[in-house]
Length: 323
Ligand code: ASP
Image (cartoon, rainbow, N blue to C red; front, side, top):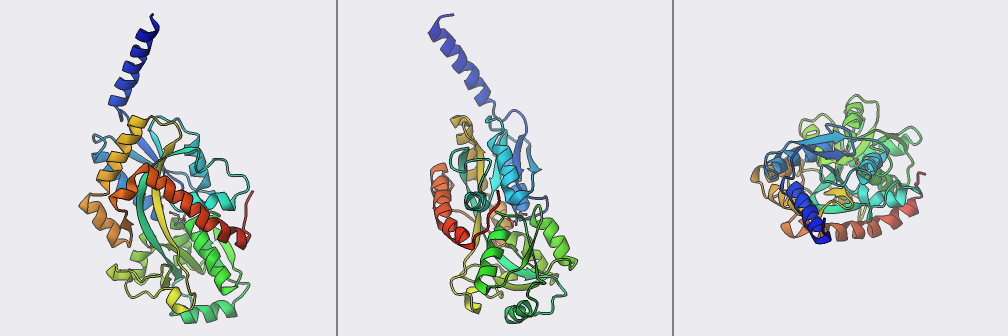
């Protein structure tokens, strides 16, 4: 066949394939356990995005472990056809400083689809911890040095970052107990097997509201406005000046995913983030959906770059690495 005809035929095939996207279920990989805070954001988002993707099924696949890096690696290596996506949080930006050999390049191996939301974290304790407030917690931690179990979702997780900075600020070393996500960590905290944990409000607000865990502080500079969490003081106001950990989520596709597919995903994400029900559900969990200008792939990537520069030095100073 003539070269031009061949090219036209190829374009027609690609065009037909793209026009049909998505013609089968789309999978969003969540790099943490089911039932946890990242998973909750993903499931809520999947439900709304589905409506914006011609009612195609959007599945969630939980690939927990190694602080979110196993799931991220899986997506980095997945077929770049728009059917495998990654929903990840701040761990995307902290992992490069934490892992000597990360099996993917954060800035080179992904297409950035857009930012989703920002979520504050809270410091909570097991229900039978003998401390009713932050001042009492600090006394208890001082008195129990060497015996404290701090749960997290592995090196590179948000709970790890927050716990690391907390230990550093207090100059108290704790034994970290890693899980594949903070859903199983929460079960053990409720059961009294671990003592304390930092976790997103998307996982802790209902437990705090129901009085099921001890709530000591919010990790952002400003107190929260969500009614259930409004009374929780900040760490900053209780002696840890400047303590500020708020996390964020973004959506990614493997590098080389076709531009028309990325555009479609970005449009579906933008629409999902304007959905009043989605916004309401996020707000009830203490999360804030990002403004429309931050949902662009370019803004998303710029933000992740800035976060890598922001957290890298603090993590390196804390000297915690994995191979
Ligand atoms: N909250 C977890 C973290 O610490 C992740 C999760 O289970 O969603 O990163």
